[in-house]
Length: 369
Image (cartoon, rainbow, N blue to C red; front, side, top):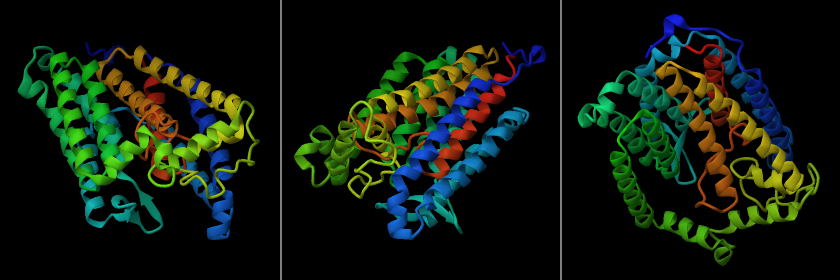
């Protein structure tokens, strides 16, 4: 039942805010530690990536404060605008995007680089929250054409545009969001199981039809068998974790970042954390992540309005999937794919999108309508 007229307002969740800022601070330290030597050698400025990440953090914090303070109607009334804008950006990525690593996933606007995928996650959550809150009766009465097809269609359009880049990992991420939102939105379990089977079959076809994806899969199964080729990055990541032991080598004293571990400051930054801070240090990061997610899901649980609850849950899903998938990749429990660690990995789009998610959660924490 919609109870906006009876809304009660509370102070924002400052514990959530504190956890996000502390995690971003840890990220800044680790970005500098993992990138300093590489930045000095290739760019002549060991603070280059640290300064860029600090700039991204300032922009992200500003947007987080804006999202926390603005009337939430700003998000909800423009739901379709966010979706259309995201689709346009995904189309532009394919047309004018920069080719990096065999795919077009970035758009350059002068000195600014943008990865639309990170913002597609947020716009998809807004749309799905809007749909499941407004169409709840149709979803619960099992009306397939109106209660099921629209969210799958919108997600499918975004996924199709991502596959044109190609970005298999980003496609899988959006599908995970759809599955989680459908699960809490009341979609029949039989439809979810059927879509999961079809999605798994389609995913395997895409993997087996592309040699580079198949090589990644086989490398994940036994990375040490191809340690000099496809399994190189994962093997170096595991070496980093292993050499960290309990207390770590010490902040800044890691060796894997000395051009052994590719993308040490990006997707595999947690391997550097494990090597330099050890089991104790990385456990503290895990505890901080768990605390942030506990506060985030608490915000979702306390919402009484369906739109607010679905939106908060979706933002939680974005962050939780980012944390879990990144750690799963660097620890070798899922096939390698570029998934940044929220708040910690280097990258403006990921960091800003993470701050926006927290900003929306902070906004919703102020009312329990």
